[in-house]
Length: 150
Length: 150
Image (cartoon, rainbow over the protein chains, first blue to last red):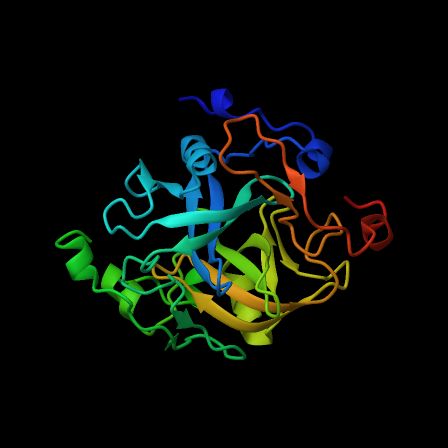
């Protein structure tokens, strides 16, 4: 379905920033960026993208839908793993090209088995090359959850 | 400076996800996505982009640098407003195309004067059109801080 049938088109910058209408500014690929944080801990769980249909379904159902750029497909978070995201609150940013959802995350958000995709820290105050520090353990076995799928 | 002189190129997916080397996966425009959260409150302050030089400077200095897509320029957060971001921790995600920085934010992150760019909530359980709900007051006067600049 065309974006323009799901949301009103963006207006002038002043309307985007100070208006009360949700008029998402989709990029050339028809996407907005979405950051999902854990409602309880505040931890960033993942960053992904939504097209108009994913955004519409997330708003309507209160469960997170995304658009996979690599697969070119609409995707309900947890449809394979069961690790769904119940959206507690959604925010949109000043120029309406990014959304923030606070979620109750079942299981783990990351396909590698961690709670968050951001399981490695980058040490600061160094020049490259930088050695990453693993911070988070797996909370599920990706082989058991996804089987042969990667 | 070319990206390849600042960071090693990304390897195989297994190396990207489970390796200890920082090998950012810059997109076709040479950018990774960055989400900045408030170190104290956990609130998402902003989502922006970093090119290799911005990422390198952020790591080296512990202060946030970005790349402005609209201006096509490297940009130190707070260079005009004084509202700098001191990076307390940096994380990188599973496929190394997004970074999360926890920051101490001076003043406000948003050029509209709010602490966070995500000052409007999107009500859930509704079909479009959706009316946004303003949640956050201004913490500074953008006219006073930026003058005639928008």
